[in-house]
Image (cartoon, rainbow, N blue to C red; front, side, top):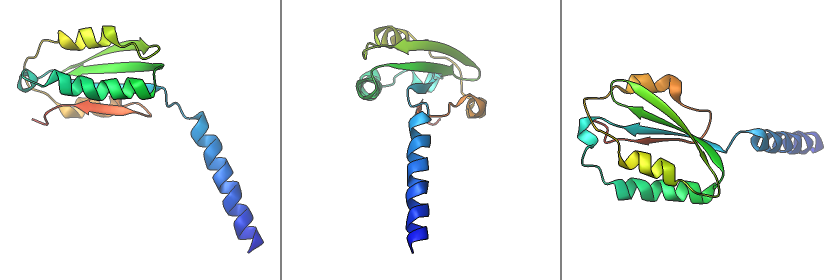
Length: 119
């Protein structure tokens, strides 16, 4: 019985050490730029992003603007200031359809967010 408890404790300590070394300060945002998203509720999307950057104010962000192709832009968010990212998201040109299969290989190891209507 002591061995089982010891092994369980050892496993928990190991998992805690592993989780602390994982990169939780990197975020990938998939932003659908297809024509169906032209009338999106930006304030709703921005509200979600505001919570993300309030929770982790210093992080690296990769934004994947996608429709039938994907364009990747990197941002460094410091002290929760994501004004440049917000400005860029506000001026996106929406056009064409989208293809989700191109996103598979672009997902990061942690914190992936998909902003789309699913069409």
